[in-house]
Image (cartoon, rainbow, N blue to C red; front, side):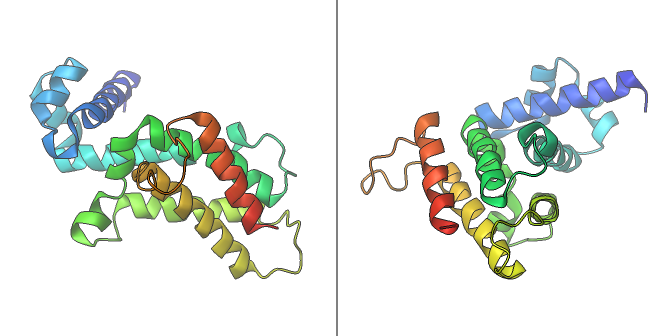
Length: 197
């Protein structure tokens, strides 16, 4: 693939993300994406073959953006597991709020077709395994079993994911404004501190 082809593919994918964010996944069309990308519909079919392939590659692209920045987010490889978890969850919750529609699209197959074999779930599990491989070895709690630590990581990501997908679910119960970065960080801090106390 030439640099120009790669650039065109990425431009179309970024336009797809923008379209999903503004139109919602159910209203996204090839024509709308083409207009945003400033290409014709035939170009999209040439580069991706189908809308489904384009959406799959968009999920893949956005999941890589969300979950492959290990070294950018956690600078010190000797950081303990709870601190690594906090740093990554700050990044994750920020992305959930910045790109709510694309975040929901990552879960489209499990929500709408009870399909857990799709690319979104695959990437998420690969990320969790890589996260644990990298940072689980720096255990501040050497007596804990691996599976217990993995469960704590799942608890943390699940709690943040739920708030990201349903940010106003608890409006009548707690006074956090999750649209504010300060509240997001406080939520993450309290969550991880509780899990690892």
